[in-house]
Length: 200
Image 1: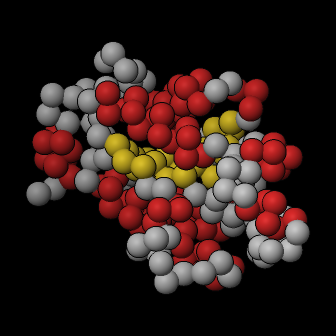
Image 2: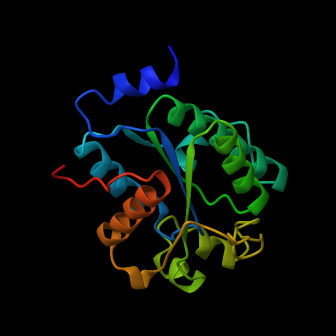
């Protein structure tokens, strides 16, 4: 089945179901997953299939063989990009919240989608390090600061900020619901389609 027929089938009864990937990058604790989950809910409620491909969860299965060296982190992002492309090709909106610290890996994921003719939206969740440390939901920063955790992105391992993200989110943009609305607007601008809402 070609992509057009598959998307038409997936979108039966839904308005404009088109595959795409929204890639959320930022430091640990920045709020990537929180916003992605809200975006997923809004999309699904509007009749558009979506799935959160969480970087942390993928490390428990598909990427369980990878550690946190630079090479392993690059491979983690490469695999996430390939799986996201497959989901997008199937007609879903793949939502990928992953630190993905290296610019080259994110650009490779973008290029993979471009080669396949699929929309790719990069969202930089630019929560400052100080705020991420204050939140520290997993206790990772506290462990890193006392030397019990090495290679912590933002502490002793670099994070390369995007140079041309479609959207940059900061705490000034409001709570997760408000930020999710901005993400949907960015997706609509990239895809050229109307922004879905919970009542559509």
